Image (cartoon, rainbow, N blue to C red):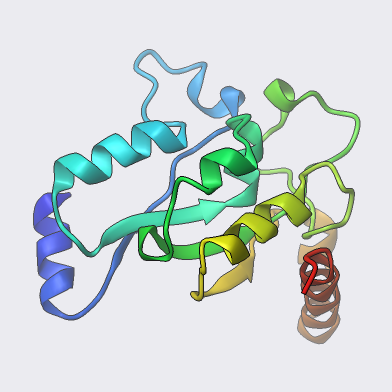
Length: 162
């Protein structure tokens, strides 16, 4: 990873790492890998390149059972990109399945007001994108899918006070 970061850094690019929070994704493995923000911070420190940071994902943040206080330990420079999702309702956090997500602010299960509010507080100014793994959205034609996703993103952004 250090060499990858060095190479992409030489091209003026940043290298983003994303931890995988859902217990169903890491708990069944013989050797679970990084699944928290703290563990990812350790890895980034070990890589030792200034162009390495987080791809923050509201889904992984939620399923890792992290808080806005965790997000507030980061700076704008620590975050490369941000993905927004929501979680299906009625499913315990440890039972959430990574491939079954909702559009941002669809269910209110994930505290997107807190998540986005923390990003505002740290001065984050990078890309934010929707990343739902959602069969209903996949079934739509391109234009309705884009419109539905745009509406969800506007709803999520409206949760953050100006």
